[in-house]
Image (tube, rainbow, N blue to C red; front, side, top):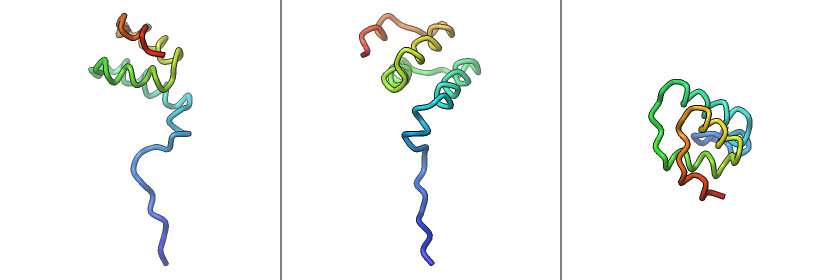
Length: 68
């Protein structure tokens, strides 16, 4: 009776979704301090949608323009 164990975290499919962008919005709106390294990871993962959310919350840095 071995049940497959579920691993921690969220699957990639679930991460790359509107839910993921909503999590970014919630973090920024709550005032959580997010480092530029982490914000750049959001941009790499979600692209222009993340850029726009980060801009709307006044956290966008010029260095983010270098991320493709």
